[in-house]
Amino acid sequence: MKVSVLLPAAGSGQRIGRGPKAFIEVGGKTLLQWALEGFAWADEIVVALPFGHHLDVPGLKAVLGGQTRQQSVFNMVQAATGEIVLVHDVARPFVVREAVERLLCEVRRSGAATLAVPVPDTLVQEQQRQYGAVIPREHYRLVQTPQGFRRELLWKAHLEAQAEGLEFTDDAQLVRSLGHPVALVEGDRRMFKVTYPEDLILAEGLARTWKS
Ligand code: C5P
Image (cartoon, rainbow, N blue to C red; front, side):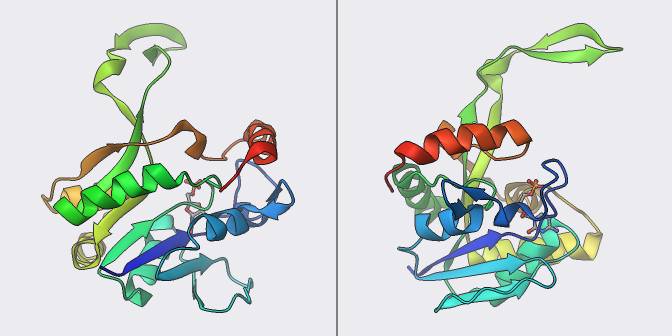
């Protein structure tokens, strides 16, 4: 089955404060270049870019990003031609091939899956800046990307969410809101999301030893 990889790269990167995150450099390459290299094996790659940005990479489909991540992904699903689509945040530059293979295996089987990792720390509710109830962390997972779906299913989920005016932070929520189960597949902590300035320091360290 043909696999399209969709890379939402149109975020403003406000929490890092260094312009659009996809174009921040780590280990001499932009986050977007890292992601493109990590998925070089894919049958098709579609990227959603911020307004005014262009990419000259042969064979790459670029679309204009939307106001929100969901709108950016909508535009990419529309442009994608694979039977399977993997949606991956460019903010996660380190693509671990074995984890992606695990994910693809599950997507081929059940149609919808995401990578996720256990919560390493104690999880607690904040109650007026005090230590509140502890949430049993063994029942929770931190959701990563890529998330994979049969294209038809993801497209239906996006159309439905748009019609209902629902906005979600990831695609697994969209598909689940259709009533379709989304499998959790073991992710990899190296696929962390670069969100805060200190994450760039971690990313620089990992980039030094990275072999794709
Ligand atoms: O802001 P956050 O880190 O959650 O964004 C997740 C991903 O979604 C990033 O790769 C970002 O570039 C992308 N995004 C997008 N279009 C938007 C907002 C975010 O493609 N309007």
